[in-house]
Figure 1 (tube, rainbow, N blue to C red):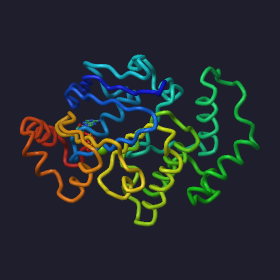
Figure 2 (cartoon, helix red, strand yellow):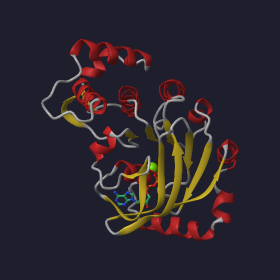
Figure 3 (tube, rainbow, N blue to C red):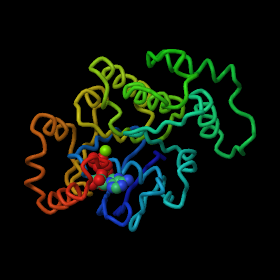
Length: 274
Ligand code: ADP
Ligand code: MG
């Protein structure tokens, strides 16, 4: 059976404010889905809700992995079950080295029943694997010795997320603007790496505003989010339309969703999360 991730009528609120208003989305392993939509439409909220961020309250709906509701699972259990989120804004963990973080995370995902304190992936084996992944991503060896995201440039943080993707090999990955903050060469490298790593093996939900990532990872489906719901789904031609023409047609065709989108943005602080 092909692994399937299914989001059914998902409603999510943050601090009591409704953000997602009935999202439906079904992905199979091996498929690439693009998730597009203007700022503040709820794309990152969907990613965080899939991963189980405790600040994102699910008030209605289900998320199923192979028919099993994962909403009761903690984020680490979801990760062990094969779900991964590359953060739009990764957080720093001073004191925790990239190498130690990756070794623990990869061990736990590969051996989901492992108890804390039980054996990690042997050091030699792990080091070889991480080195080869880092060279694939053109990352300096030094990287593994630094604290997770501590003082990383925007581009380094995004590459660190891709390195995690490579090491954890999830069934389903949400990549939240993994191409933002990168220069043109870095975007090309990141796009190629994601294609090599994810390729046919994973179900990818790619949140992006740019065409480069999708050029290397052509979507089987494109979804457009507005006002906390998916208002249109199409093929790659829909992504191309949005890249060249923007969201005017979408906003005009879905006035209720547009009104909700605008209301959410108006609530934001000037430096609000988007
Ligand atoms: P997108 O990723 O599509 O730009 P987000 O999911 O980040 O949109 O945000 C959708 C809406 O939810 C925005 O209005 C945003 O301000 C609000 N929101 C998201 N996360 C938070 C949060 N942690 N606290 C307060 N508001 C939030
Ligand atoms: Mg976002």
